[in-house]
Length: 114
Image (spheres, rainbow, N blue to C red):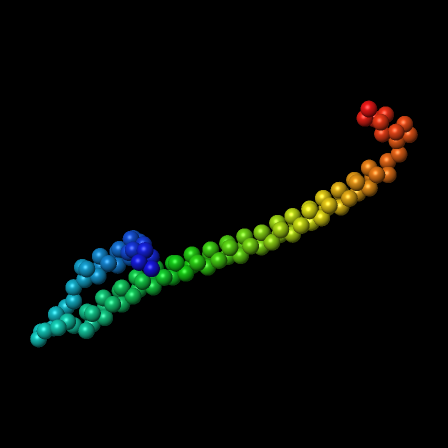
């Protein structure tokens, strides 16, 4: 959790908000305190900046989710093709073994190999 917080603080967008927060000044009231409008304006500006950051990251998450879904679909297709190929290999191996068992050598197998 602490590492995530440190990473967030290092993001340029967050750093720009931090700079803004450090530099903002509120209009003073005549008899002490700050003008409510001034405070609300600054909070509104900060809120808009955070909303923009969150929106951008949500869009990235949606895009990455779509990429993951596409990759999962492709992986499922590859697994299906792999299973079909394995079945084909097994069928061909069985067929080949049957063909070799039924071959007739008129001069005997020794004549071919020997």
